Image: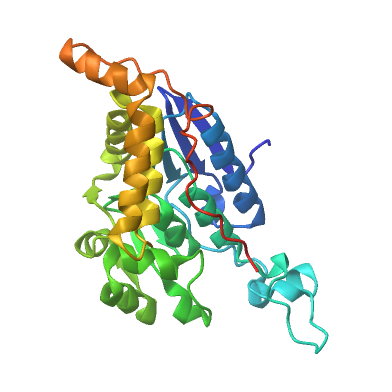
Amino acid sequence: MAYETIKYEVAEQILTITLNRPDKLNAFNAQMQAELIDAFDAADKDDNVRAIIVTGSGRGFCAGADLSSGADTFDRDARRGPVKRLADGKVDYSDPQVRDGGGQVTLRIFKCLKPVIAAVNGPAVGIGVTMQLAMDIRIASDAARFGFVFSQRGIVPEAASSWFLPRIVGISQALEWCYSGRVFPAQEALAGRLVSKVVPPDDLLPTARALAKEFAAKTAPVSVALIRQMMWRMMGADDPMEAHKVDSRGIYARGRSDDVKEGVVSFLEKRPAQFKNKVSSDMPDYFPWWTEREYK
């Protein structure tokens, strides 16, 4: 896919995805949705990509949904034609046309097999902040602003943020920000644990790249991929036994791998490890251990 609303740049095994509609403060539209999903598909298939940074072009990260359609911006029937109806005339909510576009992006990021860092360079509102919730680490410039503005638009939180946000910041903080819909500064995001650090604008990308390099430098790609999915998916587990099951499978399967032999021997020989297992071809046979949920 040729990208028009994002930039896709790989250097030193780090993919930087830049939201690239600077004249619109990188407002989110259907084309950006499709391009972001395609970019994460490509990243997972590319063994040369070890970590991903997402940032914005110009002075904004993402101003939220593109409101150029005016009052019809969130009216799916007006923009796409009527969705399916049941025999009694009620909406068939299982129609894929009902699906929230931002949610399709965050669900794709959730499934990603590489670490994902948000480098928030400016305003991040609506989908501009909720898309970050499926990313592993959020670093903000002190010029960044955040807003879960849905209540002020007469709509509800999207992009599966009602699942992600309370898990990241706690239920009370999540509700305060979503009830009020106010836009708040980076320091408040830091205090509320939405971001892990706030840095001067000129330090934002270097800080994100340094962290991405640390993730890639001495680690086994398959181990990192498994760790990402283990941590995220266990947030929804109902008992620690579920974690024990997955841990045990991982220790058994990876314990027999060439990577583990190399990791142990290189440590004993006091030399850098040379891990050869690839995410594209060498994930263990128990992966995935979950059944994918369907939209219905």
